[in-house]
Image (cartoon, rainbow, N blue to C red; front, side, top):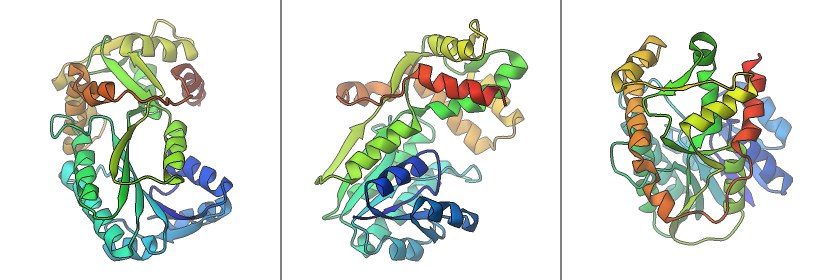
Length: 294
């Protein structure tokens, strides 16, 4: 198969590329960074350098592909984050239609069944809706949960304050996944036949914050590492002080309120996936400890 994937050599796209190339597929990887060309070619893929904001570039790159993997990369410079994500979704949909692509696997998010109140996740819902408008195109939305690797951003909090925390309590539930498990799910879906518009959920683990802090803390020699709940205002101010733009900080706080209330998990619980990812929190904790020691 000829497959085009977005996401450059990111946490999901790189292991996805390795799996698809190993399976014998002809792969094109889209990246905005020309410095990635040699690394992409070293994997055995073709590099397509351009911007996903450029529909003509996308159309040219998608043309001839049997299947396409789409994802929207973060953009902390966006003045309206939801509009940014929706705009990329529209670009993908237009290019897919013009290129005549018939099968798409789209990286979405758990919580994308909700129209609002979910911070950056709301944009993923908009992308789903845009792609679902496509006629005669099979679309599989992979609704992934919280990435384990996001915890790496909390290492400085642990080192400086001796805590883990956010604007939700130790009893709050968090459904999580390892990027490699997500990549494996995308690879499985993109290589098989499917029809219509559908959703697949994936999770590697499902815990509450207190035990999560204990597992990560134990891995770094701090088994008593506490989880501390911040107020929304404290969370917002902390993000701003750490240099996040106000639009991004506001979105993250809103996502935290969705985790606190538990609304993110409603549709996931009703659609409990039969196939779960294999990398549990304890396995990721070893990766976390290695990064913590650096």
